[in-house]
Image (cartoon, rainbow, N blue to C red; front, side, top):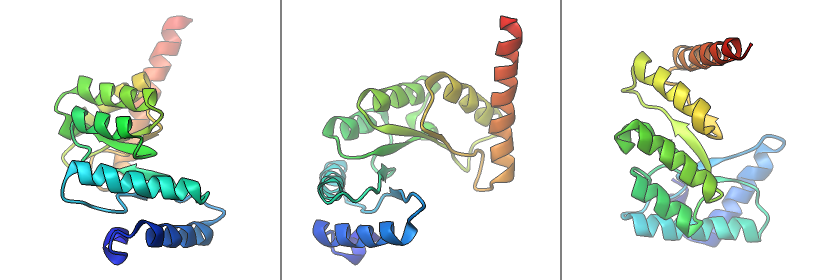
Amino acid sequence: MIGVAFDNDVERMTDYIGTLHDAATPYRLCLETPVLMQTREAQIELVGALRASLQRRSVAVPLIVDEWANDLDDVRAFVAAGATDMINVKSPDLGVLINAGQAILDCWAGGVRPILGGSCTDTDQSARMMAHLALAVKPAWVLARPGMGIDEGLQIVHNEMARALASAAARSE
């Protein structure tokens, strides 16, 4: 909506985001998909320009890419362009577990902080699998899954990670 509100004018968006940053202080503000373009290339170009403008003006608001970063090629394109601070790696969109892990590793290798995103269509089984993936590739954030709720998704992922870590610790004794 920020892009719509300011006609995708990078300087005006930077001013506004700076105002949001100041209002949020002392809390850290991160913005996901502040603009939405019609193509991946246009999205990369505008988000990259906005990120550069924020950096030039020392506005410490990380940008998160979600839209147009759906498959492994998309994630790699955003990373290669240096167009974002974080990417929401959406495991259902990536098709197979190995692609989600590779996307996270590619983000880290390119200096982009990965988020292992969830889905409303996740199940408790897929949530547990993603918990193990998160332990292996260490994304910056792991979103609760399944669904849009907090308690259930948070507990499923937390409990599975705790079980895996306890099991690994018991084996090393």
